[in-house]
Length: 93
Image: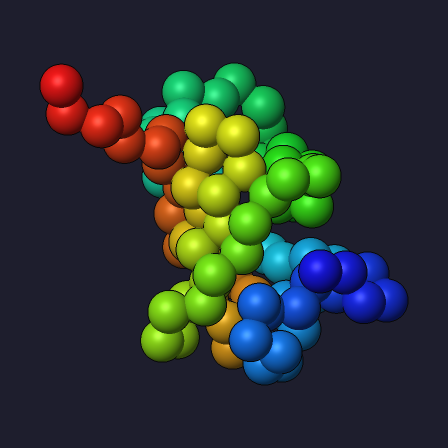
């Protein structure tokens, strides 16, 4: 659910605001490696996916877990730092 460019948690807790999202240099390197990205600045790339229609954000403890397409992003709820990103795990056969 969207509210003034912030995304509300499904139970109405504090908003998740993409304009505050950032990451560290190590975070950029980790995300590039995990997702095999060649883009120099991963933050706009991640924010585009995090804010895409159909992206789902769930807060668990201190982190938001945002599933967008084949990606899962972990964002610290307090600092809005992207911690990591991974491809979704496929169910076992």
